[in-house]
Length: 424
Image 1 (spheres, helix red, strand yellow):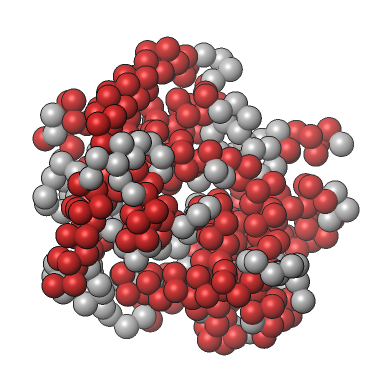
Image 2: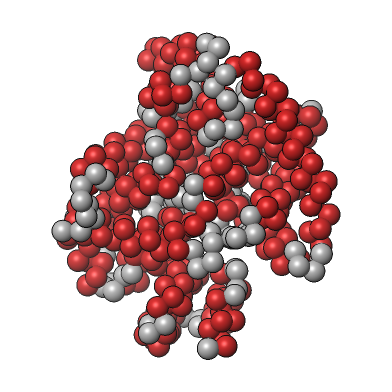
């Protein structure tokens, strides 16, 4: 029991993974090790659920070489930006400002121009995507960070930005205190891993901003503290609010060229909007992450109903949903999609009631079934895990995300309001 309690007290999956990787140095051995260990601890249900998620991360280590082999065999496609203007383009790279987009931008500006913004009308417009030019103000309104009354917005911004930097003065120096050291150390480790392919996030000043945001949030939310995965959730807000001040592509943008006050505004706005998001899904990150466990179970039940063949195929090869979908819930699909697609997805999440906490489930179901053909072609546990953890979405754009969202909405409409809607 002491060993179990020591395990449950650990906050970082990396702490768990390292010893296992040291003792398991082949993919075949890794698979056997995972299954034997799972069977051994299955009677301890809470521990069993957490260990399954850890092994989903472990399997990424074991299958790395196989993934590289597969990537070499994929047909070559031109490289497109991970962020850049692709947030407002389709995969063909055509100019964003079509006649239709210009008309939509005018509608947004009309809704935003009034003294009191009609938030319901703004949500309707935003569901199908938000024009880059008005995305910063729209996200701030839909998240609840800014009031609908236009006259109150500037004073609200000033007050909230001052409040955030008051937290910095009050709490940030405590990051090296003994009882906060582990939290800060884990944040410091995770930040360089956040979107490592995008140069913007490798700049020291950006990483310092993220460290402050995450540490202050953790200190102010002791029920969960910092959990790996929360670091990803800062990035869409940061990118969108940088776009408020620049015209060029953001991937290689040097933030030191911005005025200090502008950078401080971006930091504070990102903190508050991330906080608003996390307020709705905090049980994803409290002890044992019960929110994620419930959502993964709901995903399994939903998929069993909408595509029994895919569900039975996963069962046949002993693939547990928690082994791949834990990350989908923990990171809101940010590890599965390019950042430009996440930003487009979040347009809809912020327009949809309980978008991050509830609609995301249907997006995950639609996302899984989207790969139906590829899933059914895999005939063993290892092949399925490699495929599910390395889905080929690098070249996705608005078109693919729109199709995914439409299917998710169809599923929600069909199942969400029915009694026992996940179960047969």
